[in-house]
Length: 390
Ligand code: GDP
Ligand code: MN
Image (cartoon, rainbow, N blue to C red):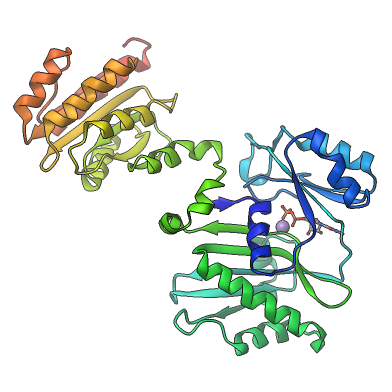
């Protein structure tokens, strides 16, 4: 889960890491007070999750209240297109209005996880404000990486090694130590997958301040960070997945147009393979789990139907712990709650298959027992839908 800049900076503040004074503005009418408070001069920053915002015009330095207003008008409520969201853009729902700072130098600093050594890695570069991928290509020598043993945590020597790499006098050392120590604590305690401060700036008194902040929280740890889940802002194309997670379904959106709903992760993978094998493209991975809960079927169909692209729906149930009659009941209930205007092909076999089929029959549906036969039929139905018929 990605955090917006102002959300990440709120966490930085909680961990005593210096950030510019700033205010979140969600409506134009709320702008003048913070701008006045900051003395007229400010930075207006679009709050979006995608990277490359500055280059796309999402960070504007305003010298007067009028310039701030113009910047806010140009950004708020409008889509901002960066290299990461080319062709689509991401709507700006909020702005961060900050004091304008003067600094000596911009550097890059981040903490991520290094899968190779299975340790957190601190990364520093004297080239701040530039994307780290770009630096890695053009000037890899300018990046310093220090790995931290997760059991013993961050030590003085890690910090010294990073600071020496900056080739600066000892003046800023105290401030740097505090910042790196606190950021590491934040990274661990909030289960971050990444915190990136780019740029980290050195002010005129040699102290360090986080001018920008990006933060990703490990999705698998969200259960212990309810406060962060509450403030989550979801990019449009991930809405389906987030909704599914909330309902306890395992869902991954794909690019195709054949939706599938399966019980069990392994069978769901095999089902996607079959769909591809017969020349179609899956619209999703969806595992409704091994439980026998008709409600899950209702929710699964609801999630599937949020994708306007889908042409056909394939339901593949291999009853074990999952009972076919429960799935059929969930399906029947889902249809009674909302009509589904796409063709549905089903394969149903295993525990309580007979009872399941009877329920399906009562609502005019039929199911295959054999997976291959079902997918071959799915293909015919799909081709028919391609030609415009049902
Ligand atoms: P990003 O492009 O989305 O990463 O946005 P950043 O918050 O990193 O801002 C981009 C650039 O704007 C920074 O690298 C700075 O050069 C500049 N910038 C942002 N805030 C200030 C500020 O308060 N004062 C000055 N002088 N420059 C700023
Ligand atoms: Mn930045």
